[in-house]
Length: 406
Ligand code: HGY
Ligand code: MN
Ligand code: MN
Ligand code: MN
Image (cartoon, rainbow, N blue to C red; front, side, top):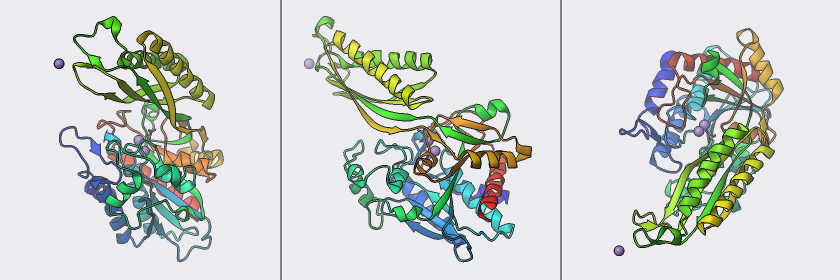
C-alpha cells in the first residue's frame, strides 16, 4: 500500500516544479494546474469514481453511490492542487492524494459505505492568481457571488471568465453549488504549516479552528520625479510611507500577538532613477479574534496616514477579503481525537486559511487533520512531510472516513 501512495505522489512531483528553486508554480487556470486536474480525473477513472466538475474547475470524484443506504448524507474529503508562487509540494496535494489512498484502503478492508464518499479538489485556494483565497469554495458555497468574481483580474489584467475560457474548461463560468448538494460532512487532511506538531513530537493533530484573517490593499500615492535633481525635502515619495507602514506592521503584530505581512508590493513606475508615483502593498492580517484583526488593520491605517502627512502622500485602504473566526465541529474533532492513539491526538488552532474553513462557515460540519511538517516552514520550497508520517496519516484518514461513512 505504501507503494500506491508513493507512486501517486511521484507522478505529481515534477508538475509545476521550478528547477531553479525546487519550489512549485501551480497557478490556477494555467498549464501546471491544468495538468494536475487531468491527473486527478485520470486517478478517479482508474478507481471507478464518478467525476463531476463545474465551469470553474472545482472537481469531485464520488465513490460508493450505488450501494449507499444514506445517499443524502454525503461525506466529502479533499483539498486543493494549486500552490502559492514558489510554494511547497505538500500544501494542498497531500490532502488530495491521501484522500484517494484512503479510499483504496477502505476498499481493501472491504468497507461498503452507507454514505457516498467524495474526493474534492477546490480551485484557487491560495488566491495566488486573482488575489482572493479559497475562491473555488467561496463561489461553491455562495459566500462570494459570481457577479463580483467575474470582475476580478489577474496581474496581467486577464479577467476571470477569460482565464477560464483560455484554460479550456468545458462550459467555463460560475461554480455549480450542486457539487456540494447533500454533503453533510467535510474532512480535509493538510500538512501542518507551523511548528506545533514538531514541538509536541507528534505526527498527527486535529484542528480546533482557524484564526480570522483578511487581505487589505494599501494604495499609497505621491508624485513621480527625478531621483537626482529633486531635493529630498521636495519629494512626495510613497515608498517612504510604505516602509514606515511595514515597520509599524511588524511592531504592532508583535505587540498584539497577531500576524501582519506585506508579501506583495507593486511600485509605479518601478524605475531605479525615479521617485515613485504610487506604491500598492497588500497586507495579510491575522489574529485570534475578529476585533483583534480590525484593531490591527486600523492601527496600521493610522500609522500609514500619520506618516503620509510627513511624506506629502495620500493613503487609501481597501479590504479585499475578510474571513471570520472558524471553529470546527467540536464534537467531530474531539471524537476523532479521542478515538485515536488512546485519545491523545493534540487538538490545535491554526493561523492558516483552508477550504475547510469556508465549508465550515457555510454550516457543513467539518474536521481537519494536520500532518507534521519537520521544517515548520510552508509557502516555501522548504515545506516538508516525512513519508512515514504521510502513510500514518493516510491510515488515520481511512479510519476516520470508515467511522463516518459506515
Ligand atoms: O494563506 C493561507 O493561509 C493558506 O495556506 N491558504
Ligand atoms: Mn497555502
Ligand atoms: Mn492549503
Ligand atoms: Mn534624464
